Amino acid sequence: MDKPLSGKNALVFGIANKWSIAWAIAKAWHEAGANLIIGYQGERLKKSVEDLLSELSGENPPLAYPCDVTDEDQIIQFFSKTREHFPKIHILLHSIAFAPKEALEKNFYETSRQDFLKTFEISVYSLLALAREAKALFSDGGSILTLSYYGSEKVISNYKIMGPAKAALESAVRYLAYELGKDGIRVNALSPGPINTLAARGITGFTKFLKECASKSPLGKNTEASDVASAALFLAKDESRAITGQTIYIDCGYSIMGF
Image 1 (cartoon, helix red, strand yellow):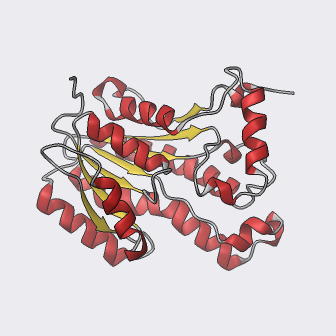
Image 2 (image 1 turned 135 degrees about the horizontal axis):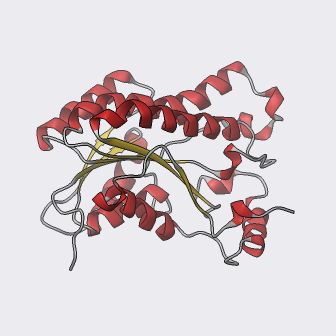
């Protein structure tokens, strides 16, 4: 069986449960031969993540360590533990986003300062924080990936504060791609269509929107997590060496449609 990522070391942030896009990507990278270390958000998710990782077989079972991206000390400790196992890394997935429930229920203009700052800290600044610590471990260059959404450039009525946050995230991708390019590090965002994850179900009217996207997309269907994993696998491989600073849509064509 072909193992295009054999010998590659990957860090994955953002696995919460079996529906997570990050989990689909982690599985694809593992099956392609990558060695994985997972960063999970606190003790609450520890057992869930460990149970999922137990499903992955192979000579090098994935490792998992806590990494609260709002805590600089935990980020530093995570990368200290990473260095104990990996002398260098080749791939990093940032699949982290959060907005307080209140911010998703109010009008956007009613967003509080506290909720705005918390959303941007976790959903955007965390990419910078992880990239900064990871930079020294990308001694042979490599690929950093994050996840965005179409609400970054068009208004999705119930997406609220997350739209501006994803817009900022995509801008951060471009600036990181520019600054890290001299070190051979590529930075890209994947922008999937709506996927039936646990987090997405928290958005009002999501089920209706899911059906609408399927009916209007050129391919007449919704995106699956496995579709995103396939794109993430390509961007982790050397064949994607000339792609950086991009937001790549994986939405069955929905984003190209006008009225």
